[in-house]
Length: 333
Image 1 (cartoon, rainbow, N blue to C red):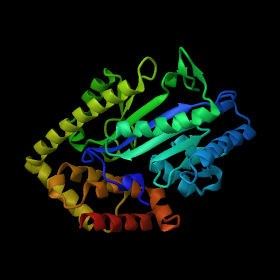
Image 2 (cartoon, rainbow, N blue to C red):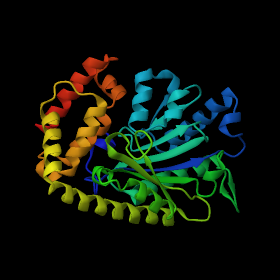
Image 3 (cartoon, rainbow, N blue to C red):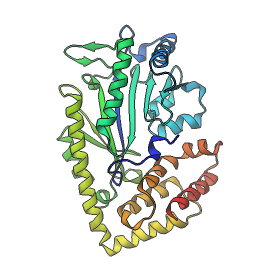
Image 4 (tube, rainbow, N blue to C red):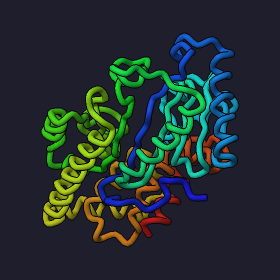
């Protein structure tokens, strides 16, 4: 079965992916940081029992401590788990569908992080997936909820809906034009935050940015999603306008075709060089024969640990760079 990031998504020339997650804690237990070892396993068992009885065969549960290190890191590279979840595996379990589009992190910051990951911009669909699973689990487990505050979470900033929604955007044109600081300031006034998806600052690896909601108290899930969706579409249009502008500039055309030369012909390719060149190439998508979803897939598949997992071995750096170049040439030939 294809993973979610191998599929086509709406607006995927700019919007790489959509993520929505709900943080939940089971009534009668302390927050994760104060759980006893046996309680962590008990929570995992309870969740697995509910899923097996109500959705038999749809999910697979894997204790993090039973995974090799490469697989743990690969899951974080692909957005299925957080880096923090990967860094401390004891007592933690990842439960997911085969395509990894719907998952539950058990005993991360909160007892459960129910998450949907979809290609392109699919905020309503992602929310529907997590909301349906949330209601099913709540009916059996009973989540901690206060009539005034909403869902109770370990971090006070998540209290309320305890929902975080985000889209990952690839914004090479806005980055080249120096518009990211201005854009970041603008969205913050609208209750959103723009951060680098791979590295902080205004120039993250691959010009990949995550746009997400900040406010969870005093706003409904639907209103937060509508706000995020509207601003995402606006940013995507700004990016497209600037891409056309850049492709009419001779200096950038030279940069673009040099990037294409690297992607089509390189025999050894580091992650940073690949991410930089593919971001430049994205500006001129009309000049590229490769399907956009195949290019977007590479953003996940070419990550170091994910390559190691694919080839079944911890490759040394040079071999990994050769394998990466081979795969990239297949797409851009």
